[in-house]
Length: 598
Image 1: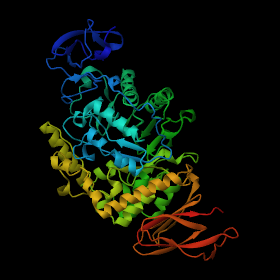
Image 2 (image 1 turned 120 degrees about the vertical axis):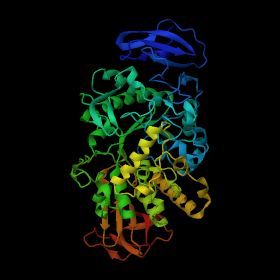
Image 3 (image 1 turned 135 degrees about the horizontal axis):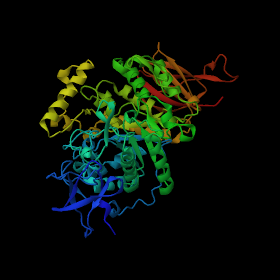
């Protein structure tokens, strides 16, 4: 039987030679511009190092579908057989996104060691927190030793600094052992600037469209069938060979595709088919700033059929309410009415004018949209790391305000996503860092980053140098903070809220019209009613007494002093017998109440 591990699609090549374990073997072109070794290979079960010499080149370049790059993105590829992993997660039945809580992490800064194996040692913390999924920032191979991962070039290989592909399999299995699913962040809209050899093989990129990252991935031009197959096969690899439970698709608005069947629709169909085969839920989440319901509308109804999408409107509304920042894209979210709209409509920009964009933006979600299809956060890698100094809201908010952020996030009807360390109020920043070994690229990255913030009005002098290793090391979590009382208290609040979310069905009811909101800008208060649950928030710096209809019990409070008073009478216009109960809330605090149904 022919060994197909070394077959490669290379329509651009005139000649191709396989460099295998120090030997050079000729290859021949076959149907569809696929190249195969010219002679049968007699190989044992050991791993093999290999690369390709294109058109007489003397330096071999990596396999576009390399599963392992032990010497980095410029080195030789190494064979890796995913089936050799002795999986023990056969009883794993997966996790559905509905009702779940996600936590996002970056492998390199999650632990001091910055590896997948060291991350396993911290999974018990996540299990005790009560999260259902970890969403892992990109792990595919990229140039240098450390970075965010969004400039990866070898989409099928796991970054060697994190431990390589076998370590990734161990990590997924360890998550499953603890009842935690894994969502992998993947980038299909562009490739990094260093180590991208795809153009020597074929038309993976195209200048037919333009993006902020340069040439686009060739999704709709000549020979795009194979480029799309490249992406589709990568999706299948994560979900099948690495037992991953879902993918977060980076910046799908940059996947420019003019074909009748959009690549996202094609991926959704592939994943539905694979889900039926493996017998466990598989999830696709889009990152998009378009506020376009088509992404999460079923293909039967003319949509793309993805399961969920990130929704930044929730973050912006919460951030503005708590911090008072109204610069840039935060400008439209000033006032509690913005937060009230997000909680009841899902999107704030649903066809409204975006002053930041200078035009109308977004489209209203259909009333039947399941709320869990929107993944929301009060902090994430983008909203922290794309600030000038990468500061978390911990740097400016009081403990009470941090607890309010947790309450709003974890009692929202959407799918909450925490960012690593958020649960204890980590004080370490998450800054933008890179480690490009090429001096010119390093210089361009540093100058570009500083210039970008200068255009946004930030003081360029405070922007850290992304190439300075200290920018990376100061972004690592400090796990010793958990020993401090103020951090331990916030962690307990997160644990209580996640447990409450799991107990109370009305918190996660998936209907947009199930929530009603009473917001008072004058008093700085917000009261959300959803079935038998009321979430009451006092944003102000003064104690407030709220009057809650039919309140019977305080289920949770951030200040441990929230208390219901004696019934004071009936509400004008309410059903006969409906009572009003006073609730005392300290400054900057929140409570969750049970109310009797009308």
